[in-house]
Length: 331
Picture 1 (cartoon, helix red, strand yellow):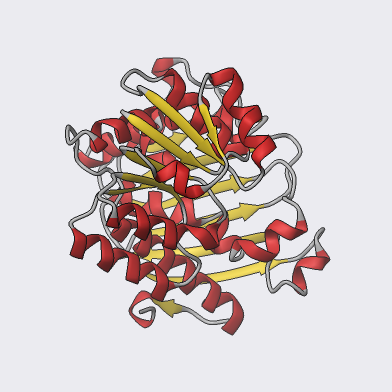
Picture 2: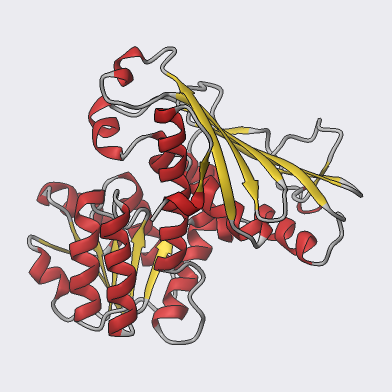
């Protein structure tokens, strides 16, 4: 299959390298707004670097979009209109109307669009979901999700990111729906600019906490932190009637970890998200190749991305207005 990757920054370059190593990719083409970077990424992969988006679309059989967020929607539309199976990193767009427009467009065109929420492919999360689905934990009462970046991203990134709720915590909002198989009905959010006072002028926060309530009454606390130099720390605790289950914690925990049997635990913090979710990124793109070939179902749809964005929008509104926000208020 002939695959074109649009955008080869940190994540795009990683995706290109992963695709180059996967069976079934007969030709890999890379495009970037910086042509030198495109050539530097392409050379060791024996890929083809092109200087325009038109060249990247020419003769492609599938598209992988890892460009800046504000370009996602028009590129998705072009790919879908051309009949190309498409993988796009989150989010589809910063705003709900633009995202909903893509959801509707994909549906009208009967297009194939997989969104990049890689945690759905992580072994720990998948094992936890399996245990939840078979009722091994009994009734789930509460959960805790922690997401820590190692160092704050550049301020220029923050200005265009959509904010911590839509940028960093969007993964937690998506995985909440996927893990527990139900919708969030209400959120209460707060945040702080401690350590990053410049974020106040950007209408953003560097530390946040979001209390969510699921449809069955389960309560979840989701916390985000932009600065934790010990490393990239993503972990979950699930508290239920019969047991407590942990994902991504270190072996010292008294709780049973779903990774323990596979000896996957290497401490709670990782040097980068590429290390923490390296296997998940590979599994995600391997699945995309199957999906593009018509051999697998879509594991993460545009509609899924819209629902995660609605939770993020509710969290942002709750933080700004200092009140609980029902999801029914959001679009």
